[in-house]
Image (tube, rainbow, N blue to C red; front, side, top):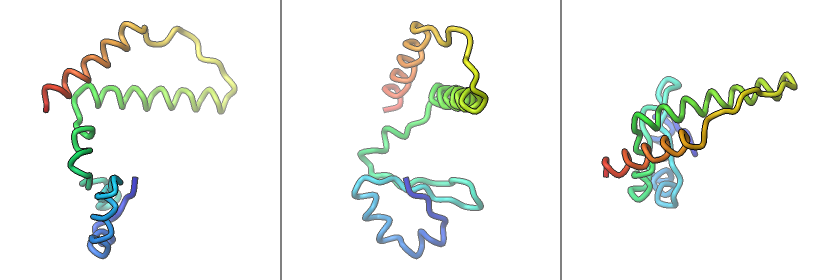
Length: 102
């Protein structure tokens, strides 16, 4: 994914549109914060954010941070992690919310 600040986007709008037409996503950054995204209309549906999507992303970030700590410290994780049933519930909730937003 490409990130452009507003000045870069202004200078390269034609090229940016061609990249989007080719399937690339472009994030528009202002003062270091992503404020917009350019995506092909066919890919827009996959960018829908639901409350569960936010929760899943937060959980993924926590898991990745834990993995990094394990790698850095040579530790092993204890516990069983998320139950398969709970994982399936989360996936079904995300699918349901995506379908409701269509």
